[in-house]
Image 1 (cartoon, rainbow, N blue to C red):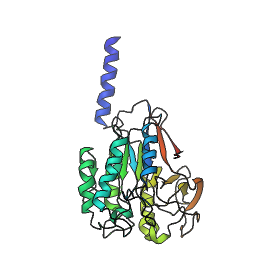
Image 2 (image 1 turned 90 degrees about the vertical axis):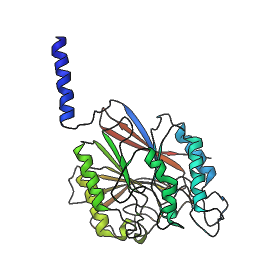
Image 3 (image 1 turned 45 degrees about the vertical axis):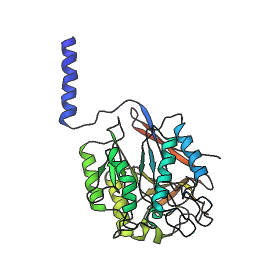
Image 4 (image 1 turned 180 degrees about the horizontal axis):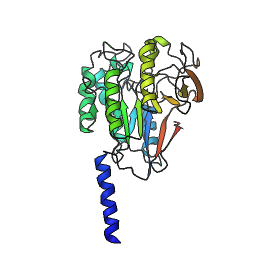
Length: 324
């Protein structure tokens, strides 16, 4: 009996290797998502470039979250950027941000993408690369071709069945857009690994949810935005995380051309300390897409707690408010 059992186990292992299938862990694990922690540039009261008070409280809440997040995704606008109301250089603002992260999240790796404020004073990204590429290199991410230090993907430690793709939208010749060719190549690569959950994060959203007009998000280039959404659908990506609008908003996106059992969730959490925006609703040109507001909170700082249940193949996202 032992011999038969051992033979069965070895056969299963060989099949996993043969088909390059990830070994799925049977546990519930979590990660956190937030963005837009910059200071209010209209007042310039926090010379760090960051809303230090809110951001520190938020990081402490993540560090003490009872689900023990394995990582933090930060969706851009870490700092204010070069601004006439601030005397602090962009390079020093980045250092201030990293020091706050290190002080609170000693055991939680942080993954970042640029927001528009990271380009203020650094249009070619050289200051960004000096500050953050070494960090991403140490975390052994895989870069999209031609975008080292900007766009990348990885599987969280111990969870080869999941993958996160972080996309830069501020290459000089491609503002408000992503590199669709390299994005599709990355999705194809992940498909060969039989990844069960692909999470995508960027700064700008596909559709405005609070304030930014079509000219200041991915809707600025609707054909390319639509192609991006089609790729998410084709590879069954169900969660797209963003910031840019300073509120929490959960939008579901459907199209009459998509399978009836597929829904894309765009979840914006620009809630890490930047000044709040008034809510103008889902205005703009939506093409043939059907947008529905599932949840929304104004004037509330916080982060997304993303729970992944491997055994049930289930993802649960909860907005966690953070008070002063």
